[in-house]
Length: 547
Image 1: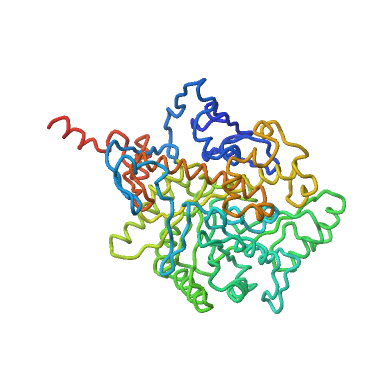
Image 2 (image 1 turned 180 degrees about the vertical axis):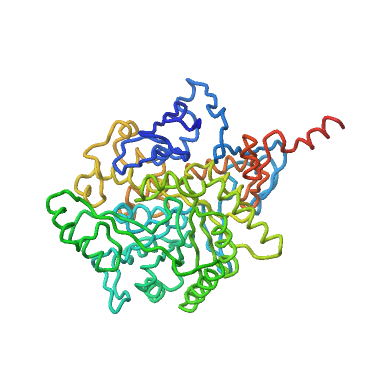
């Protein structure tokens, strides 16, 4: 299939090191990357990357001329030549007020308690993978400063050697505490910290521990799955001792480190690593009705503990599971349902499983809208939704919000919101060798791709002084460069989204609708329900011509 998002974008001056995914990210994103995909470069230059390079010396033309197959790239954004909707309070529909910086990106999700955000994005689940732990300060502080939700993924307590579990329940969880506390240190009322539960977390008493320590400061999330794989969460460990520890904690470890032959093979380096797996959920439940009953009990139990905000994460299973997630989350009045399609990423997954299993994001999201609307048309309340799975750019944010409107409130991004943390940490370590190990920097010096922008942080990061204004000059020394880079990327995504919304004459998120997108080919129109480009408003156009 033709892939229009090519390896090199000459207009923006960006390059993908390897194969480019639909998101514009490389299929393999390395923490030590020296550049420079669009997300990487935007983490330095922010909104400047919305425009072609070398202004004044060039003209540019779109390379997006082919729309083959069904994908988010085969959806296009409509624009209008008159009118304006959703102007923020105090502003009029005059030409002086209808400018893109006045587009409001603030929104909220939830039932009785509304969780506010400044931009309509959230992170994917950052769980027990080593990379999530290493760069957490940048992830969490960046999310808190910008004001979007961040998710602590599954198994964080279970893999923590310093965590204490007595009589099957957690009594001490230093790593989980670090993650929650880091976000809350800079939390100002926008965004949220979400803690995810899988089978092992439920058994270990993560929910009980979190509510006792943090109360309603934390949203708890039940997990059914994700888009990258249809088995439980996984990590890889290179220590036999650690593999044995995880086995004793109750995890499935492959190969089994307790077997003498496996230990001998590891000793002689024939086996160099072990994979830790989580268990599948609901294996003893034979029908949707049994799942419904079990799910309702789980939600009631969490509410009984004191949780006022509960969410659900589901993966790219088929239509039955999608319908179950939407119906059951709506019935139990959950605050958010994240629907993760195939095409997304992960810290660890069997590669061919990730390549070949599940429902592609655009198809899954289109059906999610269809099922949600069926419920709504019956007068039923519908859970607020977030769409995930291979989304990284501001145009994809707009398309996902429009495809699921009015039910979709957020776009969940995994790898895209991790890249600035990697990049900022590498820059911080290169500029200050004394903190290189602490911040997990991978560079000894700035590569040319970064040095071209400057030699100090305030020269390199376009949003450096915006962050300093937010936290104060004295506090700036405590802000990791990865968080500065996160702010800078968010600035580009926000400005780009504001421009797209202004072009569609929509000045608030709640006014984005399915009418704001159309399909670039007939197949995409048939699968998503979006009208084909020349069919949309064709009847209105003909009335104008014939009047």
